[in-house]
Length: 99
Image 1 (cartoon, rainbow, N blue to C red):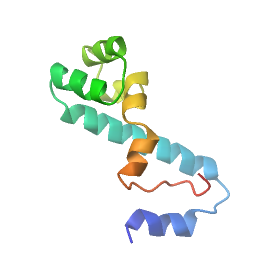
Image 2 (cartoon, rainbow, N blue to C red):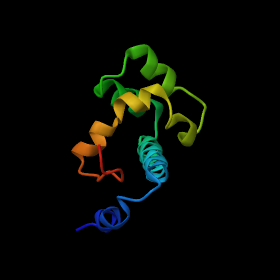
Image 3 (cartoon, helix red, strand yellow):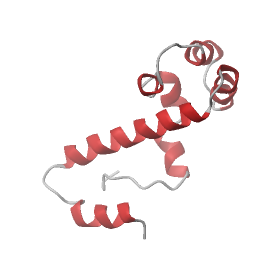
Image 4 (spheres, one colour):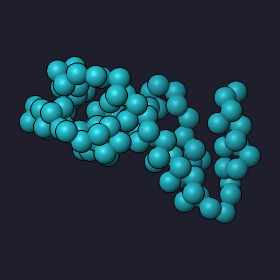
């Protein structure tokens, strides 16, 4: 059992679900940022976004953006390409219990 699942089982029914929800949002953004860093070149970024059903204009705009990975992790293109469903398919557990 992964450490996070045991932690969720212990703290999952706490009185502050908003804390877990905001922590989960931060973790997903951090994962998107790390994946964006892994796609080092603009051409790779464009190809990966297009492969994940992001529109051509939005993919080109995002791939050529001068903003850093943390800022772009909240962009619409990365939210489409690396959605929560994508992270669920990788087996990354959620921190919020009732989703």
